[in-house]
Figure 1 (cartoon, rainbow, N blue to C red):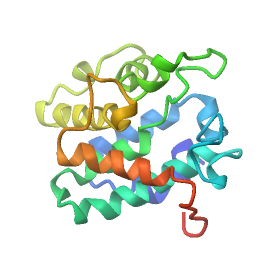
Figure 2 (cartoon, rainbow, N blue to C red):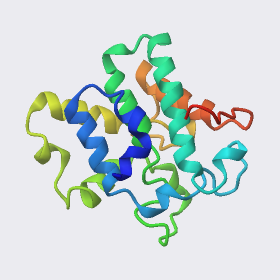
Figure 3 (cartoon, helix red, strand yellow):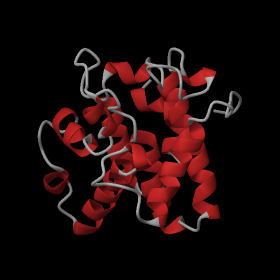
Length: 189
């Protein structure tokens, strides 16, 4: 089984093969901790199913669910693939490149913003998205995925990257709602 296959349904909601393959590649080189850690270090900001072993994966699945539902409600269908991809990878490097390297709060709050750098470094051996995807249309879509992920933190993220566009807010809301203590979804994820 490939690492990304735990998200088989969510990945296959993405129609664009370039975006889908980008997500699969990112999961293949995700930090080992991503698959096992809780979604919250303190347990204060997530429901019980997200603060146990594998909680970050569970949280990610919920974000994907809410994002998929909100795409229609918020009329963002033209960015459906980009939003789904960003939902999948938004917390991929939540604690930085390695769990052994303790990240500061500034680094933690910028984990979405640092995602591009981390994926380029860890997944593609230092090649940039711009080098990897020379086709301007494909490059634009991949950069949109990374920009959405960079803005997912809302007011808790870097001041330089707040949600601005409707699709930015959609991902932020999906992430925020997924982290509320009373949002417990066990079946069907």
